[in-house]
Image (tube, rainbow, N blue to C red; front, top):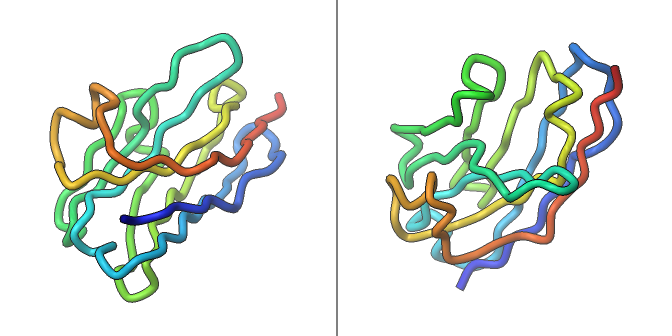
Length: 124
């Protein structure tokens, strides 16, 4: 099974950018759909973005469309989340996730594997 380790979080001013990375272990990375969730203090974990096995299709939450871009490099077993035009409301712990399915399960937060999370703080 795949194990996930996130990196790239930090403190950024509103309007700035960050790129999160998620490195996956295991030979079966290319068979997993990959994605990102986030959880702000006192709130439920929410879906952010997902990408299918071959990177031909991606899904986004309405709140990040046009600002965030998910991508993956199967040769490096890594998935990325480029976050632009960051807002204070983007402040959260961001979690990488993996699942063999790609579709509505991501909006429902039904995924198989989770990373430990990386903190993103956007100051106003």
